[in-house]
Image (cartoon, rainbow, N blue to C red):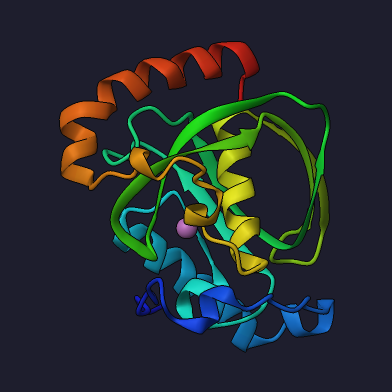
Length: 191
Ligand code: NI
């Protein structure tokens, strides 16, 4: 396994729509190694998720994982999930304002709306189909990663640019407030 370079905002690969991966391609050593490397890269960077675009590959493969992550003390846990060719269905019109950052947008956070109840259909790394409901902040994480596969960054969804902050300013002024809001969202919607 290897830690890959994470490309940053401004690189056109982050604006590309990634292509679907066939089950045959997914089974190749190249695809499996890419998945291993993405997991290692996400963990090394302390991220809650990563999409293939972020390591320069335009295939529809993304990963999410939240354990005891000091960067995201307000996020409910997400077991390591490799999702290939994900499709999101929005289940109702519930939305909440979340505060997000991104490994490809260094040292920046901002506020945006996310759907709170979604159904995600995807293949795991073995090519097995899963259909799962995701709620609350976890639903937000999956929307963020699928956005990457469509060439969309969280910045595009920030409707009020005055909410943009560096990490230091977020920790100084916003973290406590957002942690309380996140706890309410988790209590209301689950994960
Ligand atoms: Ni991101």
